[in-house]
Image (cartoon, rainbow, N blue to C red):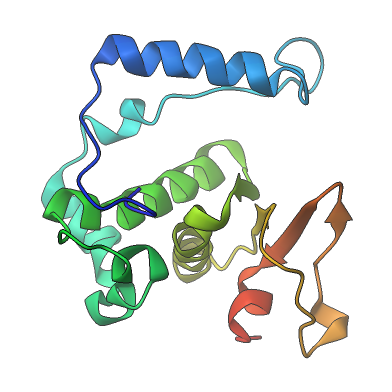
Length: 174
Protein backbone atom coordinates (compact mmCIF):
# COMPACT_ATOMS: atom_id res chain seq x y z
CA UNK A 1 0.00 0.00 0.00
CA UNK A 2 1.51 3.35 -1.01
CA UNK A 3 -0.21 5.34 1.77
CA UNK A 4 2.11 7.66 3.66
CA UNK A 5 5.09 6.59 1.58
CA UNK A 6 7.31 8.77 -0.53
CA UNK A 7 9.07 5.90 -2.27
CA UNK A 8 8.27 2.36 -3.35
CA UNK A 9 7.79 -0.34 -0.75
CA UNK A 10 10.67 -2.83 -0.71
CA UNK A 11 9.97 -6.35 -1.95
CA UNK A 12 9.96 -8.98 0.78
CA UNK A 13 11.27 -12.51 0.55
CA UNK A 14 8.89 -15.45 1.05
CA UNK A 15 10.59 -16.05 4.40
CA UNK A 16 9.96 -12.48 5.55
CA UNK A 17 6.35 -12.72 4.45
CA UNK A 18 5.91 -15.98 6.39
CA UNK A 19 7.51 -14.40 9.47
CA UNK A 20 5.07 -11.47 9.20
CA UNK A 21 2.13 -13.89 8.84
CA UNK A 22 3.23 -15.75 11.96
CA UNK A 23 3.52 -12.47 13.90
CA UNK A 24 0.14 -11.29 12.64
CA UNK A 25 -1.52 -14.55 13.67
CA UNK A 26 0.02 -14.27 17.13
CA UNK A 27 -1.31 -10.70 17.46
CA UNK A 28 -4.77 -11.62 16.18
CA UNK A 29 -4.97 -14.63 18.52
CA UNK A 30 -5.54 -12.11 21.30
CA UNK A 31 -8.87 -11.21 19.68
CA UNK A 32 -10.02 -14.28 17.72
CA UNK A 33 -9.72 -18.05 18.12
CA UNK A 34 -7.90 -20.02 15.43
CA UNK A 35 -8.94 -23.38 16.92
CA UNK A 36 -12.16 -25.02 17.96
CA UNK A 37 -15.74 -24.38 16.91
CA UNK A 38 -16.23 -21.32 14.65
CA UNK A 39 -12.47 -20.84 14.49
CA UNK A 40 -11.04 -18.00 12.48
CA UNK A 41 -9.04 -19.03 9.44
CA UNK A 42 -5.89 -17.47 8.09
CA UNK A 43 -5.44 -17.81 4.34
CA UNK A 44 -2.67 -16.75 2.01
CA UNK A 45 -3.74 -14.62 -0.94
CA UNK A 46 -0.85 -16.13 -2.90
CA UNK A 47 -3.12 -19.17 -3.21
CA UNK A 48 -5.27 -17.26 -5.72
CA UNK A 49 -2.96 -14.47 -6.88
CA UNK A 50 0.09 -16.45 -8.02
CA UNK A 51 -1.82 -18.46 -10.64
CA UNK A 52 -4.03 -15.58 -11.70
CA UNK A 53 -4.33 -15.05 -15.45
CA UNK A 54 -3.67 -11.35 -16.09
CA UNK A 55 -6.17 -11.05 -18.95
CA UNK A 56 -8.90 -12.71 -16.88
CA UNK A 57 -8.04 -10.41 -13.94
CA UNK A 58 -8.34 -7.32 -16.16
CA UNK A 59 -11.69 -8.51 -17.49
CA UNK A 60 -13.19 -9.49 -14.15
CA UNK A 61 -11.66 -6.88 -11.88
CA UNK A 62 -10.03 -4.10 -13.90
CA UNK A 63 -13.19 -3.36 -15.84
CA UNK A 64 -14.83 -2.26 -12.56
CA UNK A 65 -12.29 0.46 -11.79
CA UNK A 66 -11.92 3.99 -13.13
CA UNK A 67 -8.30 5.15 -13.27
CA UNK A 68 -9.48 8.74 -12.90
CA UNK A 69 -11.38 7.84 -9.73
CA UNK A 70 -8.47 5.83 -8.36
CA UNK A 71 -6.14 8.79 -8.81
CA UNK A 72 -8.37 10.87 -6.52
CA UNK A 73 -7.69 8.49 -3.61
CA UNK A 74 -5.71 10.22 -0.88
CA UNK A 75 -3.17 7.39 -0.75
CA UNK A 76 -2.13 8.18 -4.33
CA UNK A 77 -2.41 11.97 -4.25
CA UNK A 78 0.19 12.30 -1.47
CA UNK A 79 3.01 10.62 -3.40
CA UNK A 80 6.10 12.80 -3.77
CA UNK A 81 8.23 10.48 -5.91
CA UNK A 82 5.56 9.21 -8.22
CA UNK A 83 3.68 5.98 -8.30
CA UNK A 84 4.77 2.73 -9.93
CA UNK A 85 2.40 0.54 -11.90
CA UNK A 86 2.95 -2.16 -9.27
CA UNK A 87 1.81 0.14 -6.44
CA UNK A 88 -1.10 1.46 -8.50
CA UNK A 89 -2.42 -2.10 -8.78
CA UNK A 90 -2.50 -2.59 -5.01
CA UNK A 91 -6.08 -1.28 -4.76
CA UNK A 92 -7.24 -3.78 -7.39
CA UNK A 93 -5.42 -6.66 -5.73
CA UNK A 94 -6.76 -5.89 -2.25
CA UNK A 95 -10.25 -5.50 -3.70
CA UNK A 96 -9.90 -8.82 -5.48
CA UNK A 97 -8.73 -10.44 -2.22
CA UNK A 98 -11.94 -9.29 -0.51
CA UNK A 99 -14.02 -10.57 -3.46
CA UNK A 100 -12.35 -14.01 -3.30
CA UNK A 101 -12.74 -14.17 0.48
CA UNK A 102 -16.42 -13.23 0.13
CA UNK A 103 -17.04 -15.86 -2.56
CA UNK A 104 -15.00 -18.69 -1.06
CA UNK A 105 -15.50 -18.19 2.68
CA UNK A 106 -18.52 -15.90 2.98
CA UNK A 107 -16.32 -13.16 4.43
CA UNK A 108 -18.38 -10.00 4.99
CA UNK A 109 -16.01 -7.88 7.08
CA UNK A 110 -12.66 -6.30 6.26
CA UNK A 111 -10.74 -4.28 8.85
CA UNK A 112 -7.98 -1.74 8.35
CA UNK A 113 -6.66 1.67 9.27
CA UNK A 114 -7.01 5.07 7.64
CA UNK A 115 -4.43 4.14 5.04
CA UNK A 116 -6.65 1.30 3.83
CA UNK A 117 -9.91 3.27 3.53
CA UNK A 118 -9.84 3.67 -0.26
CA UNK A 119 -8.87 0.03 -0.77
CA UNK A 120 -11.61 -1.27 1.52
CA UNK A 121 -14.21 0.93 -0.13
CA UNK A 122 -13.07 -0.31 -3.55
CA UNK A 123 -13.33 -3.93 -2.37
CA UNK A 124 -16.84 -3.43 -1.03
CA UNK A 125 -17.83 -1.83 -4.33
CA UNK A 126 -16.27 -4.67 -6.35
CA UNK A 127 -18.26 -7.24 -4.35
CA UNK A 128 -21.47 -5.21 -4.76
CA UNK A 129 -20.93 -4.93 -8.53
CA UNK A 130 -20.07 -8.62 -9.00
CA UNK A 131 -22.53 -10.33 -6.69
CA UNK A 132 -24.86 -7.72 -5.25
CA UNK A 133 -23.74 -8.76 -1.76
CA UNK A 134 -23.47 -6.22 1.02
CA UNK A 135 -20.27 -6.26 3.04
CA UNK A 136 -18.88 -4.18 5.86
CA UNK A 137 -15.50 -2.69 6.50
CA UNK A 138 -14.07 -1.52 9.76
CA UNK A 139 -11.91 1.53 10.11
CA UNK A 140 -10.54 2.11 13.58
CA UNK A 141 -9.29 5.65 13.26
CA UNK A 142 -11.65 7.37 10.85
CA UNK A 143 -13.96 9.86 12.59
CA UNK A 144 -17.53 8.65 12.98
CA UNK A 145 -19.89 10.30 10.50
CA UNK A 146 -23.66 10.36 10.42
CA UNK A 147 -25.19 9.13 7.22
CA UNK A 148 -28.42 10.42 5.66
CA UNK A 149 -30.51 7.24 5.74
CA UNK A 150 -30.79 5.92 9.33
CA UNK A 151 -32.95 2.98 8.22
CA UNK A 152 -30.00 1.60 6.23
CA UNK A 153 -27.34 2.59 8.71
CA UNK A 154 -24.92 -0.21 9.62
CA UNK A 155 -22.46 1.79 11.69
CA UNK A 156 -21.88 0.20 15.07
CA UNK A 157 -19.39 1.24 17.72
CA UNK A 158 -17.26 -1.75 18.62
CA UNK A 159 -14.46 -0.67 20.95
CA UNK A 160 -12.85 2.03 18.84
CA UNK A 161 -13.92 0.63 15.48
CA UNK A 162 -16.64 1.79 13.12
CA UNK A 163 -18.36 -0.53 10.67
CA UNK A 164 -19.34 0.94 7.33
CA UNK A 165 -21.34 -0.35 4.42
CA UNK A 166 -20.55 0.75 0.87
CA UNK A 167 -23.84 2.67 0.77
CA UNK A 168 -23.00 4.59 3.92
CA UNK A 169 -19.53 5.52 2.85
CA UNK A 170 -20.59 6.71 -0.60
CA UNK A 171 -24.20 7.77 -0.16
CA UNK A 172 -25.24 5.29 -2.91
CA UNK A 173 -28.31 3.46 -1.66
CA UNK A 174 -30.13 0.89 -3.76
